[in-house]
Length: 362
Image (tube, rainbow, N blue to C red; front, side, top):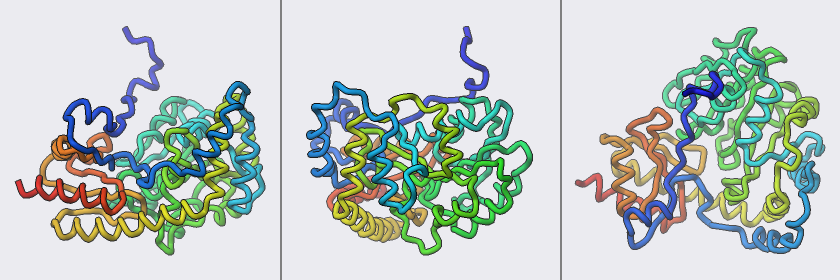
């Protein structure tokens, strides 16, 4: 008996990466290196955990429903008024709030193929018509997005750098899309991995917002700031757009501990500096080694690398899991022979390469 809404019947449950507990229970390897979910390899920030401990006595009280201290910290960090920020229970909730606030049934939602599934999820939940644009050479095809724009297009979801490929589109490409977008078409750029980007032509979305008020940026504390377990994300947008999103925001959507952690994370510049340094060094090392192993890979601007094997990635990743190495097969993204490995510490990267090389050698 089908009792669910018709618009959600095409949705498949989200497929998460393997957990340490899962692999340990199944294979009992002597050690486990988790490089499957793009988490910060430095672990929890001690200054953040101290701030959380200091706030534990407040857990009997409701959190600040407006996340004011966090939004003030974000405003100071970005040099914008706090009215330009809205906190969410992870960036997943931010994406849902955007669709809930602006999408009418039957309006078009443009998404890319081979990208994060939550864009399609958010559109379908609110009965949007999903239009998928193929990627071109493992990159977002923003020219293709421009060609699909029409009077029915309400939301455009973009991921930059893209999860799972790590590729990016440029400032000029994004501005060209915005130039041709109707003011009634909202362009949402998910920059979950944007802080890792080093390309000189990576988009400056805050600059573009001054000219294009229909631009919304979604960001997260899960990756660079190592707060994945606390589920903390935020939107940056014109206050008029955030006013509408506020109508659909649940009253206490971000917990006190997450808010306190976010403020502490923004204050610790040294942890951020070290995280970026480890990522940049690891990116260069892994790309060099994948080239040595003659594995096709996509140059990345994120904290992970997408690479291709001749055998199905599900089998390759499962064999690695037996050896205690967790990476992510990309079948659920529509990339059957591709895997995604998080850039870890030098020791973690070496452990992954050692076991991968053994498998490749047969």
